[in-house]
Length: 286
Image (tube, rainbow, N blue to C red; front, side, top):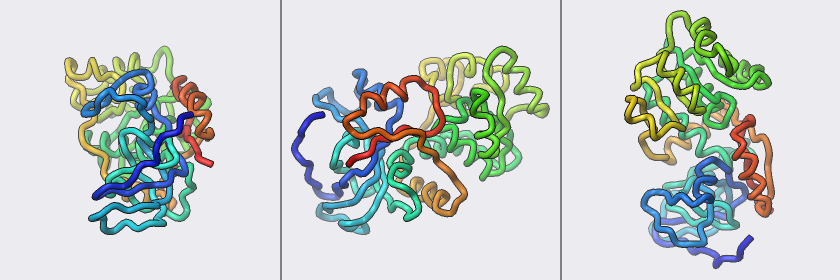
């Protein structure tokens, strides 16, 4: 834990008193030394790229966001803190029925899934395969695929199969014979694949669909040479608002599996680093 000067909102920005911040693999990469494109290597570097909280300062030129507003939003860094300053267009109102910890971890996984499935063109009558379907991105992708009219097959460990059924997916277990099990479940073929697992799951996906019908969140180095897609597009408050509205209407769930206080951020990273578990890990600020 480190004391830093309290940031001030500049023109076009808002300052948010953070209530919760999601933890995701991108944060682990930054902690391990990776520098996101467009940023310098200056330290200290505060991780955290999604948050919920209360706007407590509004910069010049901001319209439509007022002090006291309960919001959720996104950034690249700095969300693991008591205060974060972001462009006003990076926040959207938090639904009244969305708990702070859900809102804090909502942005990254849901927007990644939305961007990926729109990029793949998932729609009515399609059969979508989602690898790592019980994780944060997978949970969102399964539900969006179903809402958009697709049949969804989701790979996961056995203990998560009932959970996937509740989300509307057809579960399938990892391990020997996975390709044959998927083909048995989809006799008409798989139309597109969202790969959140990599490795064997990525290899099997190439047996099921042509490269452009496969989008991987993991195998970035191999994707280009094999014709597979990576996510394109930016996070947007309008997209986040659309997803938050689905939650508010009860048409979308987003479970948090564990919360940690800010001072235990290292433990939260260790848990996310196992790459196992259902739902989101979130830091909560006292």
